[in-house]
Length: 243
Image 1 (tube, rainbow, N blue to C red):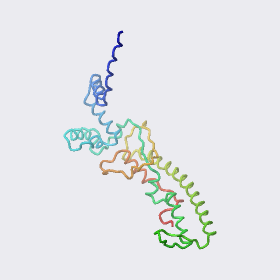
Image 2 (spheres, rainbow, N blue to C red; image 1 turned 120 degrees about the vertical axis):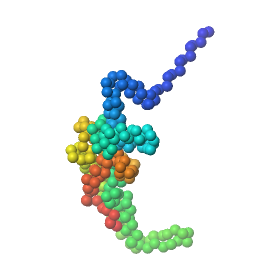
Image 3 (cartoon, rainbow, N blue to C red; image 1 turned 135 degrees about the vertical axis):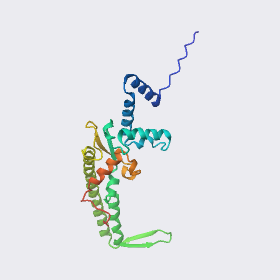
Image 4 (spheres, rainbow, N blue to C red; image 1 turned 180 degrees about the horizontal axis):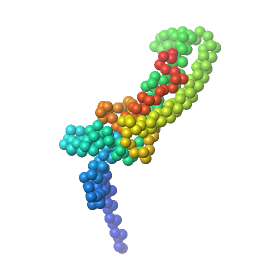
C-alpha cells in the first residue's frame, strides 16, 4: 500500500520587520530620491505614533536613537513643530469621563448616595456590642424608613442626571478635541484636513492620569490636555462640599 506523501511544512509568516524590509526595498527600486522617501516614511511613522520621541523611547541614548533623532529633528524640527503635516492615521483621544468629572470635583453617583445615607446616622443611636460590633437603633423607625426611601429616590434621580451630564460633557470634550486639532494658529497646525479626529470613552484610567514628561507627550495626550482645559464641567451636579 502506498503512503500519502507528507505535507510540506508551512512557511512561517513573515515578521513585521521582514515586511517592512520588503516594502522599503521595493520603494528603493521605484524611487528616484530614496533619501527623501525614507525621511518622509520615518516622519509619518513619528506623526502616527504621536511624537518623534515615541520612536526612540524604547532605547533612548543609543547611537541609533541619536541618529534617528537628528534625522527627525531636521525634518519636523526638534520640537515637532512640523510633525502634524506627516500624519496619515486617524486621531482618537481616549477619555474616562467619570475620572475627568471627578478631577473637576463632581461627585459620582455612588459617592452621592453614600453621603446621603450617612445622614441616617444622626437619626438614631449606635451602641457598641460585646462581640465588637455595633447596634443602630433609630429614634423614630417610621421617619427612618421614610428617609431611606427619600434618599434612595434622590440617589436614583442623581444617577440619571449624572449619566446625562456625563454624555453631554463627552460631546463638548470631543468638539474641543477637534477645535484644538484644527486651529490654524495652534500647536497642531498643519494637520491634513482628511485626518479623522474623534474622542472615545473608555473605562480605564484616562490620559490625564498617565502623562509623561511634557516634553514627550504624544499628540493624543496633548490634545487631551487642550480639550480638558477648554471643557467646563456641568454646573448642576454636586461637588465635594455636599454632605
